[in-house]
Image 1 (spheres, one colour):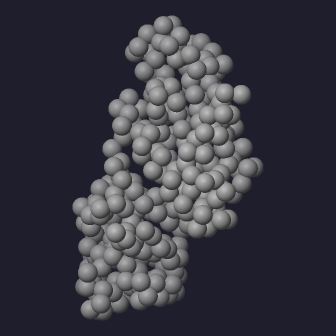
Image 2: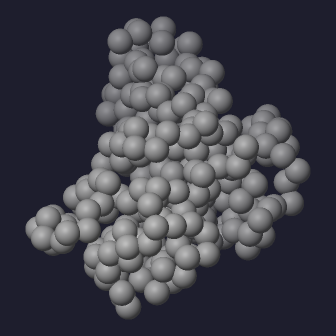
Image 3: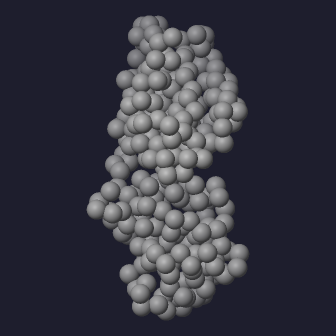
Length: 277
């Protein structure tokens, strides 16, 4: 069964990337428009099931787009989610959206509201499997990784990266610190990684001592090296807070990926091989 179509109408590319991430999890395929005329053209051609709409757009305003959608019988089932910083403007128009959210948007709130507004069969379970750190489970991470690989095959110029971080000798650390402090160490490691990354990056934890990161839409190896070094420095500082040097127990493998990989298993296998060397 084909996924329902969502159209993101927003001129800020970082916000577009964030919304694409949310809609992918919610089970939608997505299209984007950076201005009003492009949005109207896509609406006419493709009849999206749901539209995430900014109001302050170049060319044609978001309010004009709402008016045109609501005036067209062919779009009567289209759901409109307005995301704006100008609530007073929305309240003054007779053409109403199904949902209005004020910027800045909370990602979890947006995801939950979209799921309730227009449920899909393809939604990914997003409740973290790791209660200790709040990070995603291995199955969810692999689902995101599979999506990134499929997208790179459709858009060969798109690269993505995977970073594996391993706390070696975790049992020895547990013996030295005790269970409570070791849990704090793992939570601090997770928090440190999150502080170094974008909201759209996917972070998982599995096998207790492993943290794995997916970074989508990365320009190339140079940008990846900068991100990896930032993570290393953040982890080093975090681990120092526990009074002993556990940096020697941390391993990191970074891998820049493209459409040449056959499947997710090939990516994960290459990372395991790099870890063993």
